[in-house]
Every structure is written in structure tokens, then in C-alpha cells.
Image (cartoon, rainbow, N blue to C red; front, top):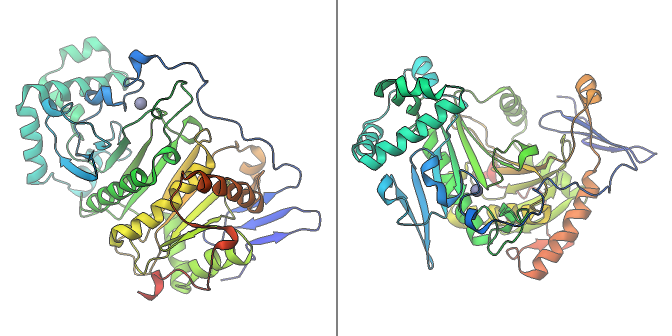
Length: 437
Ligand SMILES: [Zn+2]
């Protein structure tokens, strides 16, 4: 494959980038960076105390507005405990730090899996459904959420009243299984918030809370690979604020099981097959040579990315394993601490997409677990559409300097976990060990 230099600096200061994995072309034109980033957070209206736990359907006072939980994570002193299949009558008996529920509107429905792949729910799923619906509170909960889903899909309330129980229950098909889950954090606002702009983003969790959030999501990802035999990939992502595609300003991640890896992953597969060390050579080694390294700890490294449509922070696991679920708790913690720090440095008011990438089950080439945090601060225009050349206002070097300065402050304040920053990092060649396992 022809080698294209990923970052080229032109005499006038223009920086042309090509992503070594996706081929995405990005130009940064001088004089357009360093503009202040526009806040995507809500206006700072005072929080109405009576609504505090009821701001959105993901808030803890509205447990009955999401489909039945697959599980919840509790925090008691130093202990973190997972409860599965909590009955409707016991939902308010404990407070979930994080909860995992089926997405009300799935990208790929249970019908899709059934009709295209002959999916059948397992005995365990059928038993959980039976037990939940056998309790009057459980049946009432499911019917209420099914009605909400039908009405949100455009059904007339009168029509719902005329439906048989079986027809109503058809709207709850994915409430006990399905391949699209949401992991929801407890807080909508930070503790003690007074304004509606003080949202509890990823960067405002403690490093410990962020680790539990990450680990719980890794567990859910591993489980979703077993949802159906034809699952080829489980996509994990977090949309933060509306410009990034979030329906609510309430912290949550999504997991979607899909039956193809997608063309982009297949292309990446072929590049890795030709050069298994590519993530060292064209990601971390290259970022280090360019002076883009931001942070490092015993199990992960973070740098300002290049060749992305949006300014992007990248965190790679350096552990000698590939898939997220092969990581030990300490190795997950290492990745989580750097992702948390990147979020904290980004700021809660910046809309972002957090995207996880990993070696799909069944791929015969090694790929490290990596997480990208993309700042959704610009809108694409006709130029990008017609040329496929993206114009980004913040170069990787501007991004590096801006984020590193903030990381140094955050570490001084004790708001992020201990880590080496900037010039303190010791990035020896081929730091990623996914390939040598
Ligand atoms: Zn909320």
C-alpha cells in the first residue's frame, strides 16, 4: 500500500493530515484556530429543586420510564455490587450508580435478528420476562413504557386503548433482550449544582466512578457478543449533548450488537493484516515523533489525534491483550483514568462523541483497545461534502497544547488520577504490546 505522510506542514502554516487507518483527509488552515469553543450546555437557569431527580427520563426519580433493567451497579462504602433483574417493586429500594436498560428505540430490532438470523430468546430471558410480568408492578411498568413507545412512534392514544394485550405487548418486544443497551449514570447534575448548565459529565465523575462506569460497560459489551450467534461486533459509544446526537443531557453510553463489522473495520483489518504493528508505527510512535503525546500511565497512553474530521483525543491501551474484556481490572482502570482525564480537560460544556474500537470477535489480526473522544464543535459544509476534504479549525498541535495545559491544572487540583503528562511521558518505541501477546 502506498505510504502517505500522515501530517504535512506547508510553508504558509497549513497542516494537511491523512488518517493512516481510515484515509480521512483534513486540512487546518492558519488563523482559524484558537477561537473560543462555543458551549453546548443548557443556559444557566436555576435548577428547580422539586424537579431535581426528574429532569429527564434517565433521572433517578423516573426509573419507571425506561424498559426493565438488565442490571444495576450499587455503591456502598468501598463496595460496588451488581444486581441483576431487579423487580419493579424494588426499583426504588436501592439507588443505582449505573444502570443498564434496553434502548427504547433500538437501531436493530429483535424482529431484525429473528427474521434474518432465526434469533430465539434463551430460556433465561424467557424466565426473566415471565417473572417480571407476573408481578402487578412489573406488568404495569412494561405496559406504561410500551404505551409511551407507541405514542412516541405516532400512535393515537385512542388507538392504543383499542389494542389487545398481545398487540400492546408487541411494543415491548425488546424490553427483556435485544442487542441495543444503554448504560445510564445516576446524576443529571453535579452534586450541589445550582444552575441547569452544571451537568454531570464523564469528566466530573471521580476517577473511581469513571472506572466503575467503564468496567460495567466492558462487561455489558462481552455479554452482548453472546446475545445472538450472528453478532460480529459490539459498538460502544457515548454521545454527550445534543450537537453530538444525545437525546438527553444526562450521562449515558450505548452498546449496539451488529451482524457485520462494517466496511471501515474491514479496510482497517486489511491494513493490519499487511502490517500488524501498524498501531505502534502509525499511531503512537508517530504521535510521539510529532510531539503530540498528552498523558501516560502504567497501562495506557493518550495523544492528540490526527486525520480526524473533528478535533480528537485518542487513548490506547498498552496492555499485552487485545479485547477490552481480556483486560484485568487494573488494565481497564489505566484506560479509564486517561479517558476520564481527557473528558475533564475537554470540559462538560463541549459536545463530544466517545467511541470505542477493539478487535472484533473472530478477526484474525490483533487490534488494541482504543477510545477516541471527538469534539463536535463544527458543522460540515458543502466544501467537505463535495471534496471529502475536511477543514478543521484546531490542528493536532493546537489541540495538544490546549489540552495539556488543562491537564496540568486538573492534576494540581487533584481532579484526575495520577499520571505522567506531556514531557514527563517516556514513550519508548513500540509501546503497545497487543501485537506481542
Ligand atoms: Zn436526567
